[in-house]
Image (cartoon, helix red, strand yellow):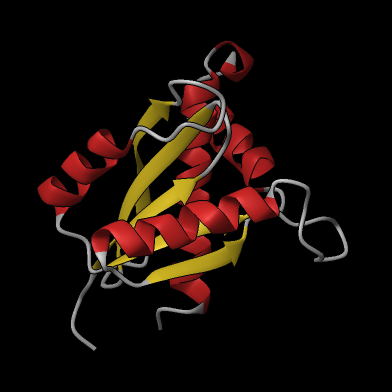
Length: 142
């Protein structure tokens, strides 16, 4: 398989964390957090600009799941977001269970010395997007 660039998304109704990664290294890094104009209103022009800039081969969206693996309360909105990504940009969109991605994101940020992550939820969203993308890269892209 040839190397592929991917964008990962941690969808939320207030913010959307975005990360960039690739199948060659299997790693991802936080890229940006987009604020929703109104709750749930996606900033499509900013996403289009990121897609134009990075030219990803695939998009990965974290699907909120409960402890038992069943879809969480935000899952229908997240799946709608994933369908809209595919419809607008024509790229493959993959969903991955994002259970506990924000917890891992906070731990990673703490390890990097960012102890007050609650004061910067955008940092958590970006890092959660990286966790989501790395989860998919490890499981599905190989």
